[in-house]
Length: 345
Image (cartoon, rainbow, N blue to C red):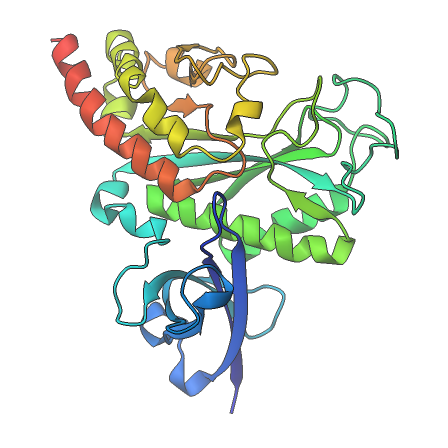
């Protein structure tokens, strides 16, 4: 009899930023064919994850997507959302906010910035008690002392692709020890799921390197870039029709909801969104073509293709919940798209 290992993954109830959790079980291959239909529900102690009280602690893990585990001959990663023991949606289950049918109409690309830290709380490459040379040579760099931990980054990249995660690219970032990977999917919910799993795999692999996968939006104060989760999105009308007047009216339609977006765009974002280091101020909304200092950047791809393409929301912090980002952007687009159509006649 062949055994298959299933590693269940879910978001806990910690606030303001949930943690990823995992536990594994073994099933017999006769009872499992690699599909959600044969992946069993499981449970966990919610009192240990801030998702239940001790006197009523059982929570349910409901599998929502499977990924092949390339680290094992017979294994899968099982992404789950959380239910209460009576089968209702748990209050911490932000994935359940998203309308799956509407999410299929959106393409999403997330740019996950992060910093790899040593156990002393310093970014890898930073000298103990001091600082490296100022920012400048580290972005998309190559060579010793310009980049750090490339072996981990490449291993993570390969593992994600083997698992079926939609990783689209990687690059070193502006601060030494800072990196970025990009996740893309035709389908907003798939993109958010893939981002969560890419985070999980980086946490998992970093254990082998004795490095800390840090998603703090401003891990080092001073003249150093913070970390964001730039969120690129498009839908049929924006890709196929677009037009300058429409795109600018659509962006303007985001202005009344600026505070609503900031409220779900990650903890500690006020330290990052200062108007410096390629960010807009957290207190102001702005947009502009090729403007990395704006809240929403209209990319060169869009302006050079008759203003048809996609938009980049640069406000989300690196630690933001992608499900909350997707939900908020979809809600705003629904309103601003209708207003933009009216505005352009």
